[in-house]
Image 1: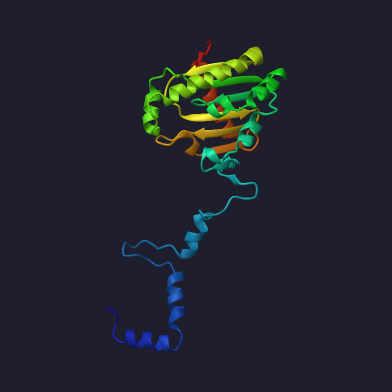
Image 2: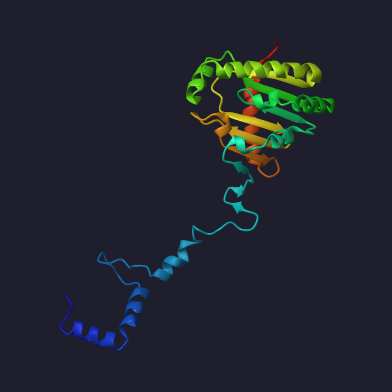
Length: 241
């Protein structure tokens, strides 16, 4: 309860324009709470709070985890043109990787045999890594994608047959392996460039998001997908048919 006459004094101060100043003084003051402890002033809290959590990274996109990675996203794989797919591997001098379920687009592209032959003639290592068509998981993938049973296995066998013909022209610089297990990603590499498509269940490959990046602009992304590829390659079997 306010003492007698307090409300009259408040109304008088308010009408005289003094009440806001009184409020500000009370807000700036610390004072004690019911427990006898001193309440900190807002200015004290601001001094100890440190930088605002919403502060933006400085120039160069430096964050608390290091420089940001530069990645170009595509909402679905179908938005990447055939010229872009071939451009990733064209002119590669060190490494070409075609890793996925069937990589049927590369297997059936008329320009790819020449691209791979040119690459291997320069000493480039070409590695093709596809899902084993005999893997029991192919039928489950057909069901997820709404395709008739046997669709993926047939596509993979057809792709392997075409890549095998390319290998005859490229020689030992081109290797083909097949892996078992549920596929998780497609990785296309041409030296320091990658196109990566994570596989989403219940989506056909052309509807899955795809990311393009370079080793110098996204080193952590590049290294992690490279490690994934190498581990899968080491567990895979040579395709010798």
